Length: 292
Ligand code: DGL
Image 1 (cartoon, protein in one colour):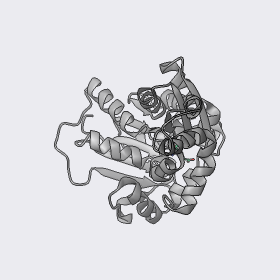
Image 2 (spheres, rainbow, N blue to C red):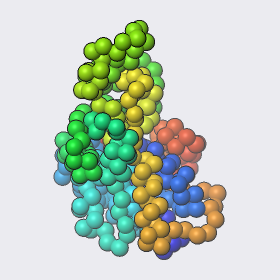
Image 3 (spheres, rainbow, N blue to C red):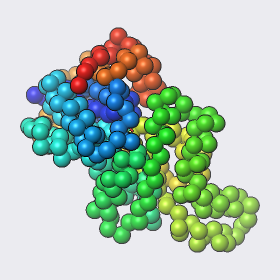
């Protein structure tokens, strides 16, 4: 079992941001990554539909004999985890919401945390609940930023379109922080910016695995002072701890291509867009087309 791969899935290529962190944290492991690109986006669909899709994806991955399943999609984690845990037995199943909430609570000084995510993740309230479970005094605001998914999947990570969509979504949440950052440059006295700072979140959680690709546009829209966190690194750590606890870590040294890619639609597109997310070339021949 130790030699078996780790299964990772997302609605598309967004989960590759988590896979990148997993591969760095667990260099000896093998992975099977499934992007359900034919049915993306999950974020605009009903919880019932997302739970059904997520379960099908998990079942497909379990046919590859995976020793652990990582739901590298916040939307699927927020509504699909109970169904997946009920149906797939005998392997640890790790979502990205708890690790993301943990990263947010560790980063925030004030406890005022903003979450941006898909419509489905925000509506379900899983992030808000997970943060409050870890830090009962936290103030959480959550904002759906669904267009970010389309931008990331289109490869439009940077440039004027990404910048203006980021401003559209984020200025209402962080306007006060931007004002205070610019007034600090102009005047020695912090003046009213201090009280406005108190109303502004000090931490922004990228509650969708596609969003780290838009980090530059997001940073430009919120100014330099807000901490930006995502769940990739904390999820990778949670997976490593789980494997260690369950004596599931792979002992043999790594082999040259330890990742197998599966997609439910165009392998060419998956390879092209996915290469940016993984920050290494993916060739279309490495991607298998599968049907769920
Ligand atoms: N990457 C997914 C997430 O983390 C969802 C994107 C989508 O399919 O809407 O929520």
